[in-house]
Length: 351
Image (tube, rainbow, N blue to C red; front, side):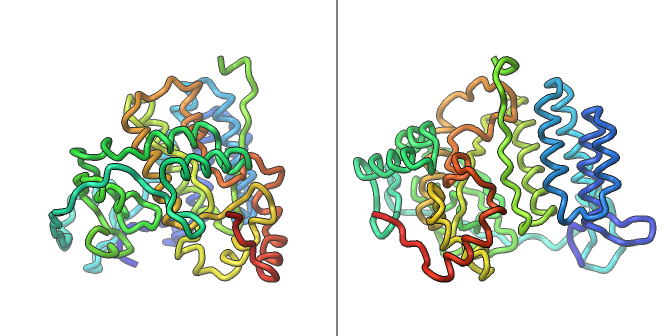
């Protein structure tokens, strides 16, 4: 299949499991944990055990010397990006690193010049209402009391609803058609956006740390699989390295959302309907979540990056986790129960 593809082994087979194991074993080796690296390489059932190995790697990174931990992130990205590129003209695949030298069909582009007045604040659609001002503050505080989001997240959204942060800035959005992406809020705020649509077309024109314990939250979902988990780790590795290089990084935790890709799978959609029975879990509509995340982006771009105990703490800032951080079970452990409850009597959100 043309495009970016996993590297082939000596027999020409492109195995996603072998590739994933190679990436995480390299990270473990960079941490100096050879037994863990060997255990990953030797794993016979990667599809159903990847989460345990990845969790051990993450815990090892937190225990490691900061410089060693950063080196492991770089090694992980180096291995994870060692893919191939297969041109559409049928010529042999080449390493992704040299794919930029290949002539390819140019991308289609167009410019949309807005003429309306820029919005000054964000409003948040939720449960049939549009929240702003006092009503939004009340709901944010309610989510904090329930355990659906962290207090610093609520305060950041309250501050970030002012959209003047975006006006006059230029944003490059990869995958601009994402349901939860900030394309629409940015355009409504008067920002200039270089929107790169990938698989999905754009919809519409506007379209002291050592003395304290560090807790690791196991959020792996076996349903999503090891390739999805690897992609999420790559995103986090890039974010952490960017933070250490002095860049402003906005990477807040977001909750489960009723996006088209989630609702497309019947079992997942039904399980989301059962989340509400497990307080404080809640699955959010894309419009609501997109507005909240845009507010977080606004405040995180307009305030200095804090000095964090480690780059790994990036993802503990402004956690809008939908309740999972304060929930006594793992997501996998409630999957069947949530599905049955969602099928028999879908949960209806409280006002």
